[in-house]
Image (cartoon, rainbow over all chains, first blue to last red; front, side):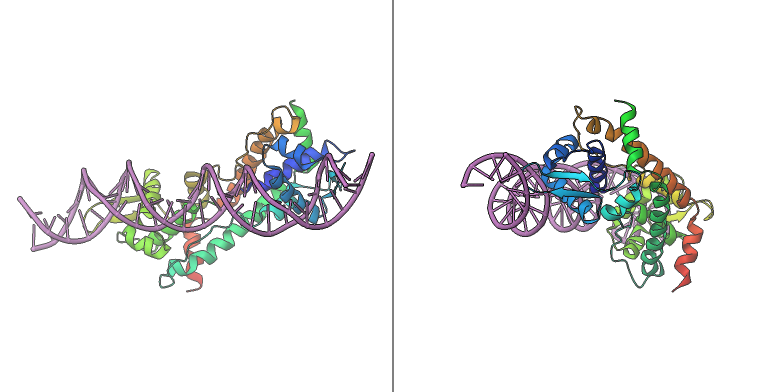
Length: 137
Length: 137
DNA sequence: CAATCTGTAATGCTTAATATTACAGTACGT
DNA sequence: ACGTACTGTAATATTAAGCATTACAGATTG
């Protein structure tokens, strides 16, 4: 699984716990244990989709822009990892009935699998992730 | 998604269409467009779990060992890719409540996602994959 | 105008996936 | 018995993907 997805969840959860002030990419990256530039790349995506707001300059940073209940993991998956389940089939042999059709069949099956997983992920909002994180401190 | 999974499906589908004779790793690898050694590695796994039988020497190869209805994609997923959905979380910051708990929370969520996807994959047997492959020749 | 941020491109590094080579072991045909 | 055609697997090389790092422009504040 793409780690952009987990970094996005991590970042949003972090921001959810700081609802009143801006958090810097440095602070989030320190919490997540990755490079600040990587966090900014992920946050840039989240901003583009309206989940967070950002502000440049001194005292700037990132802050949640929606209600915690409105954001679920499927939303985040879609923007960070859609298609990640799809198998990267090599060029298979068109002369063979299996080779010629397998890619089409698998793509359709995996697309369904992703949709199915989506139903599961929709049940987790950031609010619930925050609660789970808070449970054992 | 791990390509061992799709190669296993490809191989089993190939064998399903040759129920009466043995197929060589060369023939399967040509159909799948990958190196024979890689196919043998995957087939070795399938054999270990009883899905296929193999025979060495002249006229040898691989052949299906079960009923096509008995093998579903979840069975294959489990032996080739179990845990593939799990995020590879970097060492996050234990001093931060988010960093300290996120991995545990995500692991549990992703485990659930995999189980959920399993319910979907169980509905596809190799027999059905064969039928889908045959549909448009 | 100096300090502190975001935003993003470019480059380098590290690890995972895959291909390739090599060779031992097994079965068959003659 | 011996050459040929296979599987089985380890070791190595190559390629691709993921990620870190560097660099720097632009925005904002005091």
